[in-house]
Amino acid sequence: MRRYFYLAICLAAVAIGACSKDSSLPLATGKGSIRAINAISTSPDFSILIEERGIGTAAYKAMSLPVDYDDLDYDFNFEILMPGGTAPTRVATRHLDVVKDMGYTFIITGAISNPTILLWETAQREFLATDTVFEAQFGHTSPSLAAIDIFFAAPGIVPTSGAELGTLTFGDVLPVADYEAGDYVVIYTAAGNPGTVLFTSNTLSIAATATCSFRVFDTDANDLAPVAVQLLDLSSGASAPIADVSYAPTLRFLHASISVGPVDIYIEDPLGEPAVSGHAFGEFTGDIAASAGTVPLTYTAALNVGAILIDKDIVVAAGSHNQYYVIRSSAGEDVVVDYRPNRRSIETLARISVINTSTNHPLVDFYAITAGIGIADELPILSSLSLDGDPIPFSVVAGDLDLYLTTPGEKTVLAGPVPITAALGDVIEFIAYDNVDPAIVDLVFVPQP
Image (cartoon, rainbow, N blue to C red; front, side, top):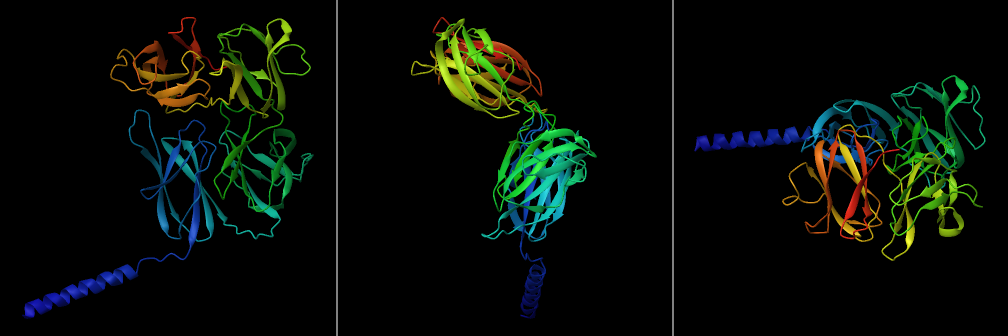
């Protein structure tokens, strides 16, 4: 009996000790906000984890969605999918003791296999409904860019010594400041040299209570200006590029309607000299400079300015690449389809995109498989690729590949095998054209300009 009583006392002691231990755990008193920005120009998306729980992803020049967590300490982990990998690889860990009412921004930079994780901290802002100001922060996240001076004021500003908000080098950030809602222009110049303008934005209309973060990044193949600038909303995580008004947009044209003969293409009104002459089926141009804003786009029969085939207005942004291809739609009309190409190289991936312009086969399946194995036991990478859809990019294993197009859900080959060799970092574009034989589709490589 005593032994049972003694055992009961011991169990009670253990239970009391356990309760005591639980009560000694830290208690949260509030929350802090966590986000991450990817500043590695050739990287894939980074996965962000708090301990072992995923909390978002960060694409290049973009920010993960902000998340709130208790004011405790955590390990934040960063992972990517390495070449040939089937599961993400953990490449960095950063410990953080979260303080309530603070915002934390991790900056991912350096090499993707061993990145450096910088940390910027700001107090979280609670605006009142009656506030007429927004807050703005300026950061330098471009490893290749030297020190810069920042100018931020109403349109018409001319950079002068002493008027700069501050000077930044890579990894620096200016303190958050309030500005009255309204129209602004941001200008970056070489540090200490206001005459050397590196970037001039278009006019930005910024509303009250916005939480703006202006960040400079390394450029990639999608950029025309020497400095890439993104406007990030720290509250929502939204991100958008800011155009440099000093750099005209470019237009590239592809002729993909077998029913239309050679055309001349105009980008002015009244029609003067064509921007492209004698543009025939299957041809594609290089990048052609155009004016930003609304551009009158006119197709005429070649050498016959009076025979207008297509006449429409297009809107193009400064500093952007744009591509246009004319097709015969499923309704039997010749129309122009536009899209914004993604030419950025990713060092861990080979990427392919395909455009279907075949009226005879408005839906196709697309295969990209190891060379020589055939499609009998393979599944398509893209199913039911539509006639007038935007190109769909996807990643493939580097090496020798065969490309095929088939009828949807079947193994009836319309094109292929088309052999290619894909290397890491490649950006590969193909276009599917009609053939004079309606049972065939031509799958054609389109080189980058």
